[in-house]
Image (cartoon, rainbow, N blue to C red; front, top):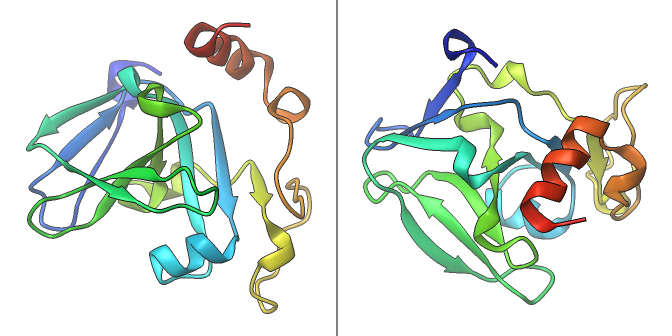
Length: 159
């Protein structure tokens, strides 16, 4: 992604702004009940990306410890003023990956889902698009991620 292609995003009040310096590793559309409750919506759309590829360009998000379905918790980066959730750090990945809320991007259309997860609990009226993988629960990244994303992930977590 060239400098001109870098995608920017931020909260509703524009107090916190960020920039993605590359494409995400993979984009999840999560239909679990936990995400539904947490967001107040039918699903959460998260772009998984290395933390060092998310540059904060204005303000400083507040990290809020929040319960998660796994029981391990997550830390949600929120604007301290308008409280919009910008990204999460889940216990399994720690601070190494950010799960950026695609809806906070200035151009959220840039990253449609690569997979729909936890579809066993999706809202019955949500119609999943043909041609996009969908799984009842979770999946193995080694089976679905592009080679480039797997190589980037290995740099973060090791082989």
